[in-house]
Length: 210
Image (cartoon, rainbow, N blue to C red; front, side, top):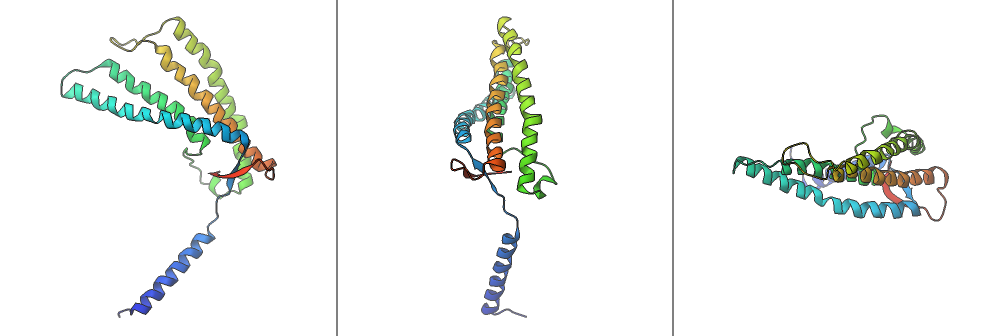
């Protein structure tokens, strides 16, 4: 049996209609409101995150150069190997705040996706107050003497030919978690705005969802 052009057009039209109805039947994500505080903090985090993204280009260049020297020239460099994990650590620590502020981190939760917006917001609120903020503040608190001791001892790499100034890479721990604390404050202000101050004039909707 062959379909005429009119039959094909009707089938295509019915398919588009059913597809649009199924897409409309899916629940849409409600946007988190944006506060004046969150806009200022997120702007700073975005600028820092965009600048730090070049670290990954440098990291790939160092890896390629180190592999070329090791296998083509038969000469490996400890400095390059240490630079690799230094750049990786800096990129990862700074990326934490950017991912959290713009909700780009991975969420693996089969239950969370089926909850109402207010329930998600309450879970987000308690998760920030009881888990993320205490953990972030603890890391910041203990990282200060950790870095200070390394600076006072003029700590260097224990590997022969390794990099000096070990306190520099250790300082990225403090910088990364201070930025994460700022991102947490920004996220907290948006969750509180959604739960308690949704109708205020200084709150605007954005594309970030729970």
